[in-house]
Picture 1 (cartoon, helix red, strand yellow):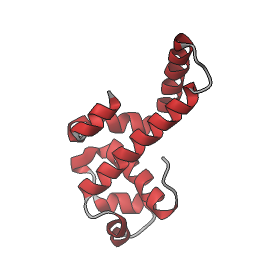
Picture 2 (tube, rainbow, N blue to C red):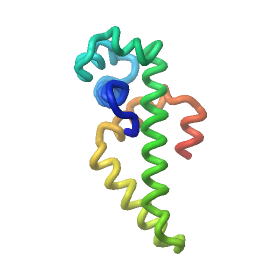
Picture 3 (cartoon, rainbow, N blue to C red):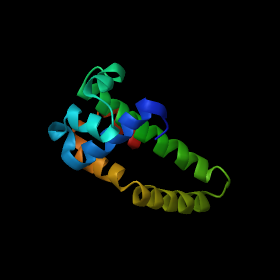
Length: 119
């Protein structure tokens, strides 16, 4: 995830909690505890659980896409680009298994524009 500092800590913790519990069962208290901050601190950065979830998803998709485009930028051959991107995607989800779980577990909560971005 791209965001750093306390906001980044909260986003990373939220991604992990949402991936473990799903959107509806995740609680701001759980996210705050995982991030090592108080519940009020979460609300300093995010107005609601929905706002936090959407920022997590935006951040995940932005990171995934920008790193994927960077991975294929060094070649012009379409077949080679496809091979590189498939390898990138495989490694991304192996190293960030919680993100894969988050996407699968929360598919019904993802905004339509985010689904379009993924497609």
